[in-house]
Length: 245
Image (cartoon, rainbow, N blue to C red; front, side, top):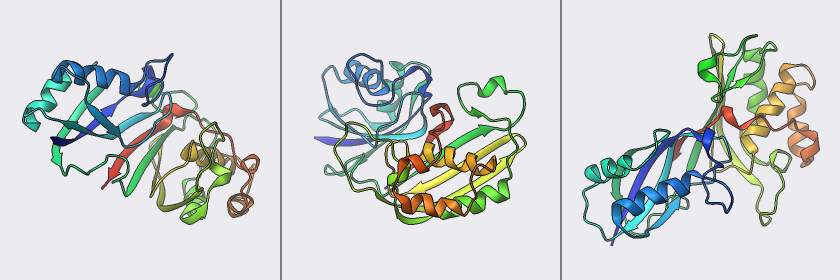
């Protein structure tokens, strides 16, 4: 038995997230179908996280246990042969048998892209949030620093039917930069709650519009009240950018 770590990238526009669902096409379903064509059998796979409908990935990791002896460099090419153009395997390496794409992960980095101009860039349609109000990058960088550190992020989590969990996360870094009209938010943490990054983005955009002060983010965190935070920013601007092991 071998354990192979595959690094994928995908455009999430046509998929209802990563995880297999009964009534919607997902990245996992399409990927597992490709694996079946390569291995001619169902194999055990573990994804590094869930991604929501419309969210993209520059790096998404999957560990695959298989008895196949196909070399890693050939395996990558074989899988890509059966994948659509919006999903690709970038790398394949052999890892210890007890390695798990999700539980062996020590941190993840997400990127959120905003096109900050009156007219949307058609090449970023479905790949970035179109936001036409002025953005003061220096101010939002200061505001983002309130998220850095270990906090209870209950205020920044969408409640759903998943079982209750520890809401404490450690954000290691949160930066923003503007290159022309493209604003890029980059956040690294030991883990993320459901919709956490998108709600943080929505809250920072409230700061940008002077709806709340940047200092009030500290109060929103301490309130542990979802209604105190901003709206959930649309999914299309979000990218799982890096997975750290």
